[in-house]
Image 1 (spheres, rainbow, N blue to C red):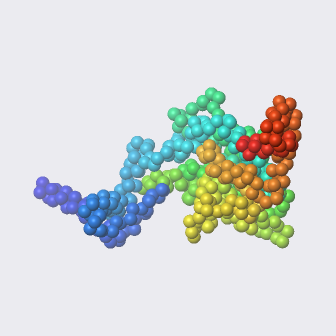
Image 2: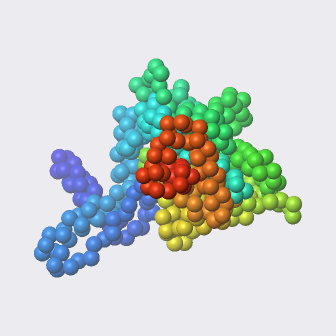
Image 3: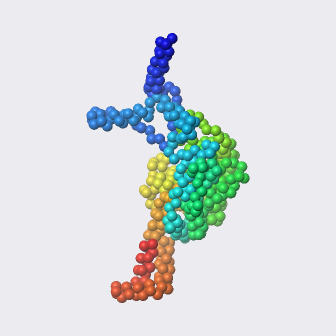
Length: 433
């Protein structure tokens, strides 16, 4: 009897070793791939020199460790056991909230004010946006700031107690951006505030349980609101976004993206989500402006939904880095484009950001556009704007007695007219803001 048990154990151990090897070679059974930010290792090519230098062996070891048979199943099994037994996820910066609501750490940090960059920094950014907005308005173009709804702000009741700390006098990047946008009279939409106001009355969920971005229905609400905002701002009738139907299904795609990244064996239970199906209808009376969106990942859902179909031309600069849809066929970087030409070729500019990325809102676009406009590179319109600013500064200097005395003194020193020196001072101040 003992011999039989020993034999069974021996055979079982051999099978455990052989079956993964056989599967690796044959791929008879289809195994579900892992999801998330995973970079597949390439099988290294054998070269005698690399073998002798010791480069081939570790590369081959890394490849084998990530490609042995049934590896994905074992990874999912390990993750599932960690989740069941220890309420733990093997994904960096993912936090399990109450009732298993999933959050990402950066959004909770933003909700607590842990990433606050300072009032002066935000004020400076918004003042630059004011200058950009005024310049674009002169060019008959429109700038709109879209502040996306955030899951931590929308579902604070599900944040774990150890993270949901009420910090007295906490300062949030999001709040200050909205405050200064209002102060500077910029065009903006605050979806954080709007979504929270309709949270308990809306028919369909605006945020998923296992996704980090707004729900597909939330995206539909946002898309419709943005289109009507553009129409009102520009006094133009855009193509009408029509709702064909709403599918009521299990969470998928963006509504399950964080759970997908957890790579569990079993699907997590959740309430169903709404999936709007839309199309655009246009007539000869409709205007179709060219659209440029600079955004974090919160625009992806609208982009994939077909939001761009309401415009003649539409581009998406993902984190002001990759250019879409061009990058689908050929990787295209914003730094390889001529910003001056891109400004000329678009009519509506949207900068869209969420609470978690608000500390770096614009991702360099604001600074680049500000520098461009200050450099007087937008043909004659910019020249007129610059000249007006110089004249306004000269008029201001004339009202400052001490400043004018300095101007007159420097004019004598450099042996030029007072008016010439006054203009030089005004230009220096403007160019060195």
